[in-house]
Length: 158
Image (cartoon, rainbow, N blue to C red; front, side, top):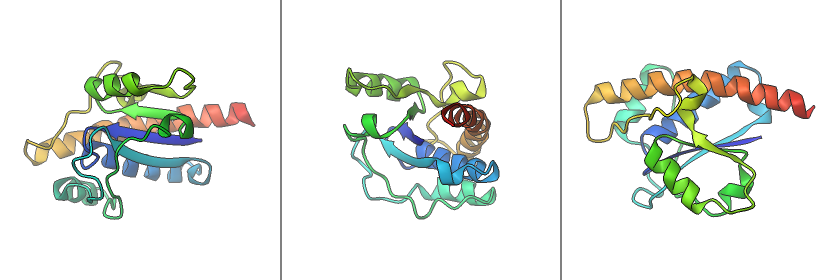
């Protein structure tokens, strides 16, 4: 099973989601069965570490994002991943525009897994520290729901 989190530049929301989801996979005993990555729609931050504010907020909750490096969405991601999860509607529209006709992956909004259909993880880049805290709260809720969805799917594949 492979999960990809997608935001605009891959330095705030999607790396935070990647880190949080990894934690919950580990706690659920599924880390060895699910590969996780994140990327951005655009190329602006390729090769850079997550925003220092995102790293700081995550560290306060025991998450280390420092090893992650931004990358841009690649055409092959649609074949490699089972889930491509956008942080907001604009990212979802960009994913759907690039989605190949033969793509069988689940392409949708991450917060749908928190029972927040149609809701966006807000981009904290141009705001204050509270925005990064809100991102963490939202991605934690969605990560818990996604772990359960992945568990059910893996059990169905067994």
